[in-house]
Length: 159
Image (tube, rainbow, N blue to C red; front, side, top):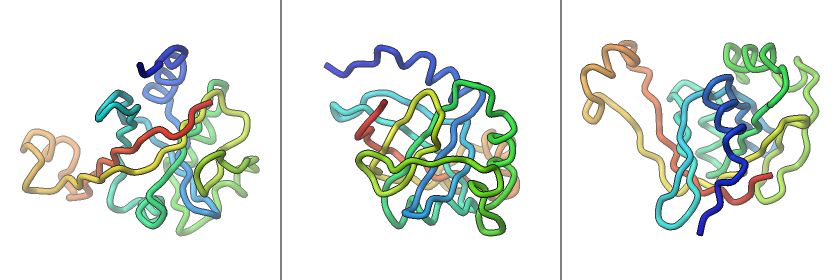
């Protein structure tokens, strides 16, 4: 049996306020507020949408893993900053004076002081594009052609 006890607060914060996604040995951080958590193939799964233009995509693709740090406290400034700046141009962790801690099972770091952490290993990635995205979604979310990639990842550790 897969246990989801205690996940309510983490999901509410992630999907309503956002989470910080880290990837890479010297991590880049970005904000995510879309996604899913559930069960597939007998495993706890996170589906993380990441746009083609996001710098973090490069690190997820290289290592095949990422971490979600879900803040329960007031980190709206940090979430907003990490969602509007690119790691290509600035070191967001340094800019915000965020503290990081090595992840337990994957080669990245998590953001210290958050209420929940999910360390994830990519099982597969499904890129959205003109051919597999319904017109109504293209018109509303992808009119600029900047599609998401759906990273389907197994949760290796949560704490």
